[in-house]
Length: 204
Length: 250
Image 1: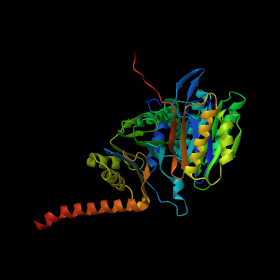
Image 2: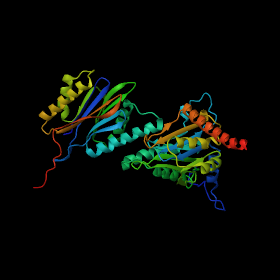
Image 3: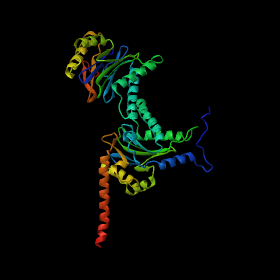
């Protein structure tokens, strides 16, 4: 089951997502990157129907780009989050997207922020959020240890605690995770946490 | 409510499309614009006709980005330009979305030219009154390109070209003085060509360039343009002196 979670620290936001691409009982791949760079200073971690996930997040990404070219300046994180919610809301009672999104971003005026956007177009600005069965474990762990002014190292420690909890307690826990960070220097990969890597064995 | 299906652009008895030709007249009255393609740099330079003192220059940019790697300058009706540029920007993103690849310069030129042609063969509309100069570097191959489109919807690739006011004189100059250049030399060539018809000075020209390395459009500041203009003037003066020098001795 797909796990996505994230939190806001002192001048940065971190999101983590599992990297399994699952179809029924088959694991297609275990290095699927579900966290997309929306623009230089925004991250979108998405979970849900794989087709919808890619289609919808790429659609949002291109529209965010278009805004930048039309207006000469990029969208704020809040504006991008509200645009995303609006698109989900419009499609909801016609042809809904089954995609849950955690949008993290950094704006010079307002610092780091995290937005919780679920598949029925709920929008909340949050300090920490999570989706999926993993949320039962990561949310509880974050509630216990989170502080608003955490440093990157402290936040990563917390993220690792959450991953450990998911790995040990969720029956179909995903083996690998990717962690990405966004701060004043932009959005970028932070680390991967892999317990299983693709194995290629020679034929016997 | 009248139906918008009557064609406005129709053939004359001797095979002209007068609306298109009148649109070209509008282009001829527009600002001079120059484009030069170098080996690793592409440059666009546009004349700035007497900027009103109270106007915020940032809102009246004549050279715009269509995408990270493609830029456009135009001559003619600026309001028509806004519409065309907007459609082109949407197409750039749409191409990225459906083909997972940025546009090539030729693709987006063909698209813009296609739009301009459509408006010469549709009911109830008039042609766009502008010609465009499009520059950029193709994705992956990083080959530099310069294209021109006009109100009729034709387009072609150029090593250097000009459009707008006095474009014939500028093109003549370019034909005489064009050679393969790179980097700053390409910028100088573009500015020198534009200075043939525009009053000298940083505040009368807008210059923007794209290098293969950088990949994105960078506008030159007035001070930078002034510096290059000064260099060009000095080179011109030196050339003049060299010409006069030997003849004085004899």
